[in-house]
Image (tube, each protein chain N blue to C red):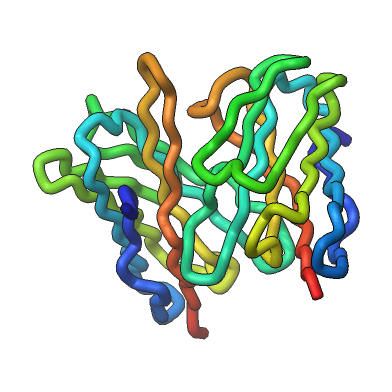
Length: 113
Length: 113
């Protein structure tokens, strides 16, 4: 059945290491998104992509990078330049635009030790 | 600058009663509003939305009210059921031109039997 998968559910990394979070969707959606959720804060947009081979920075893109080589996949790399990488990361997709109904994956909790 | 605020981090309501979740925004350019619901260890799911040309939208037990002059929206759930216990996020969007979507911090709703 259709949906969005994120793996792994929990991820631990040492400080200074880059780490890549996976996001795959089989909904045939054009647009995909990465959000970060911290305690007491709403979902904050990191990056989004409305079409293959194109992506835009969201509100908190510093220290992150993405690629969109395939429609189904939108991996997020948390680089060592991200000052506070420990967080809950959510991937989402929508048919076309940022304001279409978004369908979210289950999330990945990243802990940097 | 928190453009979308949910000032109540948590709310506790008795089963069968009405739950009212509130959301305030500051940017008068927002013209579309959404509510998402999130269970633990899952991604948020879309619940209901409203366009700025309306002041009310109803879907079963869920009704969203929009007061543009007060820059305030609320989600009413009646009657409340135990399965409604979740975190509720409101989101505000600009759908024309340069699109924008901003989430609130979330309100944890607990329905007590």
